[in-house]
Length: 304
Ligand SMILES: [Zn+2]
Image (cartoon, rainbow, N blue to C red; front, side):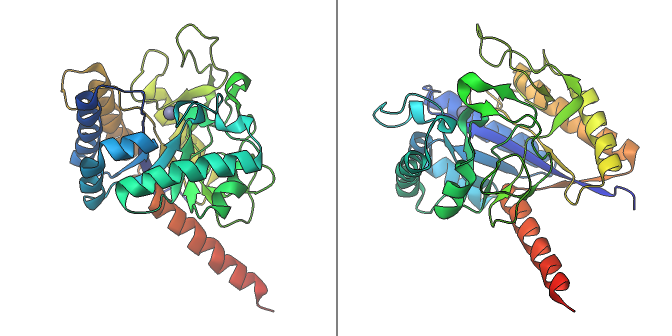
């Protein structure tokens, strides 16, 4: 069976550290509108304070089809009691801090968050279990190949396609009801670089980080992803991008906006060249697909 369709998931992490409220709004709205003009929806992971700050905008975008999730850097949340990223903490500490973040998010948006991404893709082997216990349906927590121990973010050897999470070991597929949708990385292009100025380069692979093309060749990454999907024939071939709310995507001249347009155009042309259809997707959509398909499979297995 050949590859006929690829799922496309555009994500943004909406950070509280972006203190310019107007810039943050222009960034979020411009990102969603630009992507929508190409026919794709977006998934926004929103830090609790940002949910409160941009309540109306976020609810309006949700009405238009955006999927909203929770984003959390414990060290930037609340009273500063937590100094590190999520992966540094025990299950009970994670439960407590994520619950506190959920409460703020819920009060702001009038609904429970169902989808999650930790800051810096930080997580440990407690995280998926804690998220499932707290009622989350899925997340995009992993960046396969990333080795960044100083931020408690290590994903060497992680499963690269959407899957049910394993609740005891974060790197492999499991049978839980929590769906993990990894960032898509190009295993042929090692050397993810410099996400934090002045710090040691991250070890990992190039990916579709929209705001920064100096270190990433979007065309090669997209080509290699499509080739890998064809080789691997995964159940859910998915292209997952990321960016932040600190670039003015509403400004057509902004370099990040130009990057975004470039990724969108490449996606169209390279998919056409490869004879596959790009299908816009949200985290909610992918979670529903993974949960319903695996359910059918286990039913089939039970028949004599
Ligand atoms: Zn973040």
